[in-house]
Every structure is written in structure tokens, then in C-alpha cells.
Image (cartoon, rainbow, N blue to C red; front, side, top):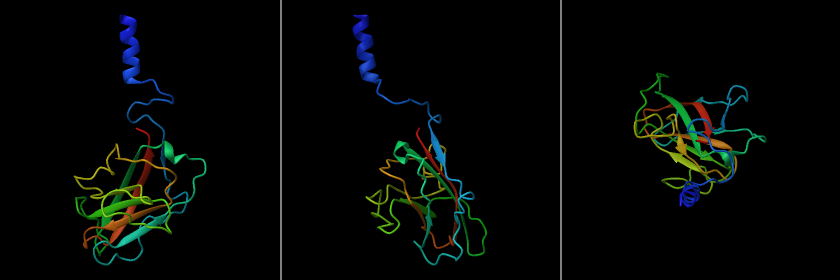
Length: 168
């Protein structure tokens, strides 16, 4: 009877292939913007609400992006005078993009075929993408761009601070 219970417990909990990691211990990949010469802040002030700044990413041939299940994206935002604004909801939105020549905005809400991640409230209390655990993500290939949009006309400059892919 005990043997049956152990087998049932293993079947229920699972013993599938691949390494298992405790939260925060899985593989991760953080983009080193400086090393790749990636411009992370718009040079010209954004005009109006929903203006955007597209950041192109290089190819990372040695990274299997399909292994990652979460992403952390941190951004700072600034007013027209270059003064940093307080992080809060309804300020900045971020979208990951597979093909920058395709639909870079995706559906109004949530991910789309070319936009595997769309998150509102970057830095705000309701957002999750900037937090330690990041946002849930399911990639089929490497994203080639990050689209940052201002949800508030007060935001005129956006600076991408961190882009880290995790398997947590």
C-alpha cells in the first residue's frame, strides 16, 4: 500500500524531464545594453499620449529564448525638462516584439502573434513586469525589439534600465 502511495504521489507531483529550479535559481539572461551599444533612451521628446520609442535588439545566437518563462523590464521615465517622474500606474507601457517590421503594437490588450508580451503600468503598483519575479512569458523565438509607450502625456522620455529573461 505504501509503495502504491509513493508511485501515486510521484505521478501526481511529476518527475518530468529537464532540470527543476527553486524560485529565483533558474537560468537567466540579462541584456547588457552598453556592451552591445544599444540606445536605451529616446533622444527627442515624445509628443502626446501613446507616443513610442522602439529599441532594436541584436541577435543572441547562443541564447535559447524559448527556455525562459518570465521577463523583468525596468524603465525610468522623465518629463519635458528631463526630471525623473515618480513611478506609478498609467505612465508607461512595454511590448516585446518578435519582428520590428511587423505589427509592433499588437492587440489592444495582451499579447499577439508578433508581440509575446504587452504590459501596462511599468513601475507602477499594478504592474508586474518590473518586479523581482517579472511577468509570465511564453516565447517561441527571440524578441528583436522592445517598444516603450507613454500612457501619460507628462512622460516625454523613457529609459530602459533592465531587460532580464528568467526561468522561475
